[in-house]
Length: 423
Ligand SMILES: *Cc1c(COP(=O)(O)O)cnc(C)c1O
Image 1 (cartoon, protein in one colour):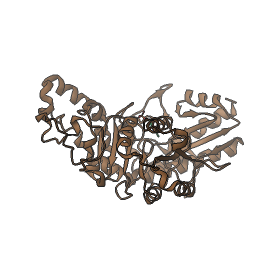
Image 2 (spheres, rainbow, N blue to C red):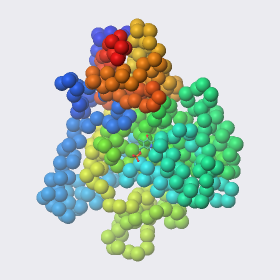
Image 3 (tube, rainbow, N blue to C red):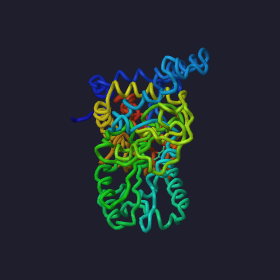
Image 4 (tube, protein in one colour):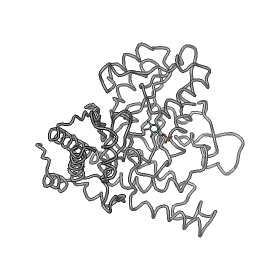
């Protein structure tokens, strides 16, 4: 399709868009009394309008039933979290028994590493991407030290090539082969937070297994953004936060995946708690741990229902729409955003460089050569909510659930103004 950088054309695309009506399902902040253009759904997704009622229900049940809410609430609390497994399994391509919601992302990665990073003999190394998200770097380094190794030796990073802004799959595969029987674990962010790159999870997982390693993924930027088949790809474990593309609210509860082949085992090392115990016998308070036959064996505490409620509300929306429709709109919307950027770039002869590679999803990371922080500040003042990453990159993530083609056009006009006026 030949795009045009006009308001009329953008509106035509919105009219054709079957997801356009979902924009009304979300609350938008306002700047200067106008609804913002929101590009930070990769950081904190907007609040679905239906979410508040899910939380209010729990507050009401707690007020009226107190402890009896565990069993007699509209949606009883003791198994509330189970309601999320089915819709969530459809988002990440898993079996229902392979997914649950618990804790937060970094906590879950630590817990899963207890089970799946088990250095033995000369097999103790971990492969990750260079400049992984800081929390992942701290997590990996502390795990490695916990086992008595030196992170400088035990953590191997796949580098980008000189002059390139992305990781090549072939370089990851070569590294895996090179480390060979010293490789214990591959753990990479499935979609990179900085450049928006989507990793070839299927191929990398296969290669990791061939080398005899476990393979896990941090799906913070992948969940609700790309289509995945965690079960079919034979991924060992994964975790993701729910507050980015999954719109569940600040710092909210994380999702966790453990492949079926690791379920129902009693001999797997694991940090255990009562919510991982056989639920039929949980309240018998027996001394011996009897793990749940599903991923819930990794749960520790009784579920934070107040936190899970917004996630359930959001999953209702994901189930209504489905990942296929989201991915389809995502690609068109992102392509249109890129087109608008290039048009503006020509008009003002600036020089933006999109550093996001072709294997991408929602996010475009744009290097602003010659423009700086004042331009970013100008955008924010004009109601374009984006984010800034050193040295000179803005990240634009037009979440397909609630961003429109008209937003992209308007953003282009504001950007042009900002550059012309020397902001
Ligand atoms: C957002 C993000 C996190 C955040 O971790 P929390 O434990 O939820 O604070 C971790 N890893 C990656 C790759 C992220 O993008």
